[in-house]
Length: 150
Image 1: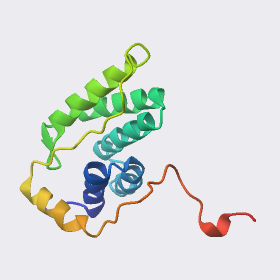
Image 2: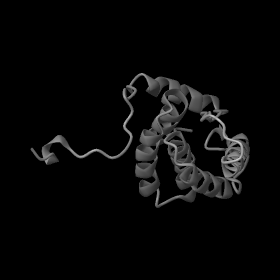
Image 3: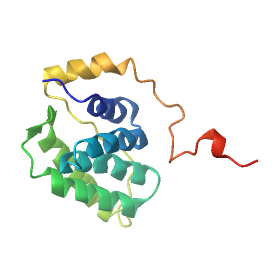
Image 4: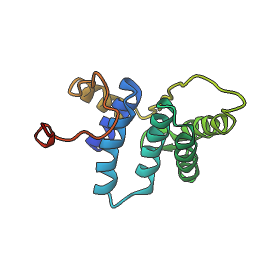
């Protein structure tokens, strides 16, 4: 099975770069191209939930991670070549911990999406060299240079 290049980019940004803003950018494009498929939206929400918490927005992290888990739990354990069951469990746990963050704070940590389809793993590896990590990572939408006022 050949996977969408935007999905491959999402996995590279998620697992290798931990660049959740770029995850949002590429998966939103795929989500729109695929007729607003709820699976892609939920995967996008995982990245955005982590992005929010990493930027100290606990409430935003809770909301997005809970929405993602609620949607993703309805799909098979292995979906789109990834261990979705494991991801759902980790996302639910993360959201639960965030719900009690005021009483029991903890440092931000990343999640990893386990790739279980060997063909997907090969495609991700093959595409990874073509994606240069953003350093520094973008923290939000950026206007084109031509739109900046002097």
